[in-house]
Amino acid sequence: MERLLAIWIEALGEEAPDGSTLRDHLALLDALSVLCPFTESVRLGLFVLPIRGPSRFFGGEAAVMENVRSTVVELTGHAPSLGIADGLFCAEACARLGLVLEPGATESFRRSLPLSALGRKDVATTCQRLGLHTVGSFADLDTARVGERFNKHALVLHRVARGELFELDTQRDRKLATRLAQLRGEDDRLDEQMGFFGSRGAGDDRADAAAHRVRRRLGADAVVVASLRGGRVPEDRATLVPWGSPKSVTRDVAPWPGQMRAPSPATTLTRPVAVQLRDAHDHPVVMGARGFLSEVPTTLLFSHQLRREVIWYAGPWPLVERWWSLNRRRAHVQILLVSGEALLLTAESNRWWLAGIYD
Amino acid sequence: MAESAADLLDGVDLLIVRPPSRASHGAARRLIDRVRERGTVLIVLAEPASLWPLPADLSFDITNAQWATSSRLDARYLTVRIGGRGEAIRAGEHVVVLPNRRGRCEAN
Image (cartoon, rainbow over the protein chains, first blue to last red):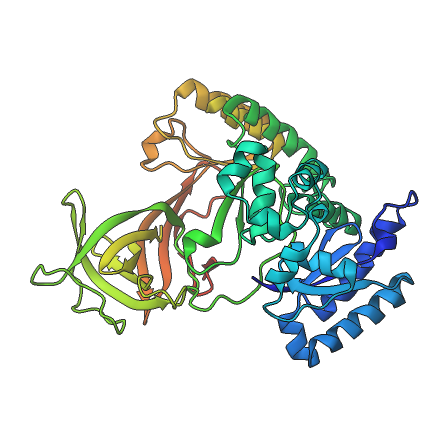
């Protein structure tokens, strides 16, 4: 389990009526993300970040904690309580106690916690009557007995107690991330719908009205908006999104190694069609381990015995994706048919698929 | 389909339709009337041309398509024959590059 630094700021645990709590959270999240980009705001007053990466960067866990502490004090004026352990459940418990556990000490720490740490009064009271006072003694109960005696929530607690789960449902505030995004103005669900052609113009109202009428007539997904996004293969790049669905704000401009260069096939097949490539002797053409074709392809064969003569081919271009998986070696080949049509084929473990048509 | 196309003509200035089968004369007539009324442009992708029953003001027919290749597909040269009924038609054949090396359209 991941070693986590939990940051507990008691003063931010309750929401102030003036909305300052959320603003403080946002400022803190931004500042802490500079220290570690994976910082998470788990719920009000509680932040957590994986400590391994930052501690290598800052030169030790103590240095990271010092940085975090001064950042929090500077921004909010409150001193945080810090704790390090494996998994969110123990990390929070440590933060409340101000403890840093040695690697490997999480197990015994968890077992020593009082039952109230699991946050369910009914379970804690019943167990105390049975003479069980610590998380460890609860963990030692047989799972079947726990299921008999308590409800299914207790089974989750039992798994947390045994160290099979690393956090309680009650630890996370699932709405907090959305609220922070709204405060930041990133969540566009509340924003005005974007126009068909980017920013909104006068004509968009007319277009909207027409699109609404068509949608009423033909169904919710009848009106779609085409867009391009990042991806290596053409079928990943072109997408049709139902009109009116939330639009992703980020424009993907990242480079994609192995991406096919323009021109791109105008038609891509969402379900690739299996085809065969044959050489002049009607033997199947296969792609070797080193990314070469075994022979020059001369015939394209569709499953229903439809044959087309291949007059030219280019490639194969390997797709550098999931290179760590040996079963996932794919390559693209362009071919020209005698009829003048250009096709994009994908080779995957000696099988060929029609991936796109340059029509 | 024809009703949806008519709805869309109210909303946009340029509409591209592809009739899945031969459009009925009446439906095509009504669409064209709507186009005249609204001052919009209707582009019909009809292959074969008989899918659209009415004569067009301007027609583009691809008479030849040739891919230029190097180590990959480079560009496609389309010979387009332009015809129609208006006065401003520069009838004849033109070569258009679509797509060119950058995936765009180019006329020379």
